[in-house]
Length: 407
Image 1 (cartoon, rainbow, N blue to C red):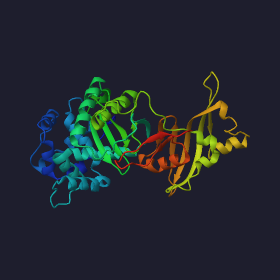
Image 2 (cartoon, rainbow, N blue to C red):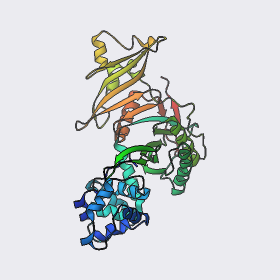
Image 3 (spheres, helix red, strand yellow):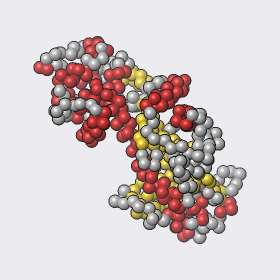
Image 4 (cartoon, rainbow, N blue to C red):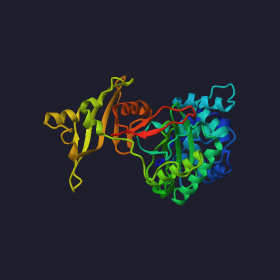
């Protein structure tokens, strides 16, 4: 569950009354624990819409507590968050693909999500997971140990289940609970994976409906993102801890490639370098040959000086750090022997005027405002030399060699 469990629709009496009444009853009777929980809170599910206590139901749902069934919390969370016109078409598309018959009526967003939860809750879980990909993330890259990079298509359900089983054992050992789910999203050049899992139990004080103090225990929900690039054998990982990075490298290697050591975790390959800022200067920011990008500026640069104090100079500028250095008579090329560039923050203006930040931290870390920018940014980084890996031609057996550039 999310850190803050607040329903937008199921605590609104007007919206509750808009939901098809037989469907609402079916939902709250889909699990015997639900009506028992409501009865303990003083509400009986009336069979007559005129007698149904919508206000009482809204009050109960407004203040979940430790006795609220986990299944009810899950159901309400997903249904409430996806009962939105923006998600409506995606849900219909998934239902059509899954062969789910929704009848000839035109359901409201609330009716649609309730019906789909009752019929195939995995559809709502998948769409909810997919929405998470637009948030800012830091990726660390790990590469395959061998010279050949196997392709990877849409993973079979049995393989995903096997990964989830191993992850559940690992997360349970780390006191983060079970319930891990892996959602794959195949793309032309990569396969994306969103891994939903729990975090450690949290406790918060509450004020109950009767004004008395209470408390609620819950396990916050977390999404990790992994991207596998078959051409380079790279597994890019966004997660919170090195332990999770290691677990993903091991279990994805084990179940996709029959090798638990397939990805180099202990001795990772360096992917990124900031050397082009020294060698090319402001020409390293050129982007005329990158479709979709209008301009790139260097807004921040971290320079480590050769000393026993780990002396890091942080330079920031409103438009161009390199130009600011030049105005002071400094040239990074002249200082090359005594400095190391350890972090750079670029502002990228895309076609249409949208600006987003990209942060590169050698040897293997990149941060993006949106993963959707990943492909075009990757092209620019590759062409300007910020990526140290050079991918050879793909051979007839659909595998590619990857070598380190001599930089």
